[in-house]
Image (cartoon, rainbow, N blue to C red; front, side, top):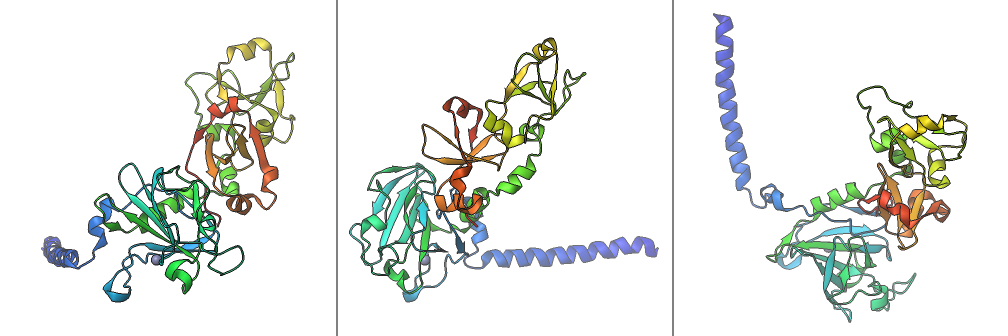
Length: 351
Ligand SMILES: [Zn+2]
């Protein structure tokens, strides 16, 4: 009977433990300031507001003088580091002339959330003179009611207001549509993850065009060998034979050489064979290899898997990813090929 008794004993113990646990959870829920209770509405899909090197921790709700609490998160970053719009928004408020609490700008998105940037720079270059004026705090065009795009530079970090003692940082707040400050920490953490881009990791994650395009084998016998380069004797155009049995077009040499060193591996096939292979689309740049830009747009983009273009929001970030000579890594992407790509999250993290 000992065998039967054991599960019985276990079940009783389990029930007791469960009761204790349930009581514990209940008491824990009663504790003041349980942020977990509000978790569902505490994450906004934002771009990280600092474009450069920074550190931050969750110091929302920290006690401040006169019984106040800290209504934002402090992102420590060097003076003059660009701060960017967290989302597509409109400038609702900015302090011109400088307020006693420094330079600040408030953005409001279409859902009514506000993103508040405090302690923007008030010094002239390489000084702590406090004489910077609005042009050293806010980017050109940042005026009340201006429309800003996610990732757009709205100003520069600094130490205006009471940040003078702490050192340069961006104090960042998010306010709900019903005018409550919410903890921006989780939103910032998620933005940080989304903003991450490492060229070498990107390149390694797409060893072949099949991987990059996630091509898989169709049923039946493929009409060309997956992963090979093919051409006809008559023409110089080289195609990639995809795992899906379709051929993929290299729109130009630049794209080709992001994947291959030379034309050594190209096999010649009969024109009739080539004609039977349907065209699958254009090959896009191998991720991580080159930066691209289109003529109609001043932005520099990094390329991620599957032809995803990710706007590199500042020269500082470009230099951190591709070295100080990053400009030499930029290819002009003819506008006509822009359609082969789609836009992803901006890259604004330099570390
Ligand atoms: Zn702060």
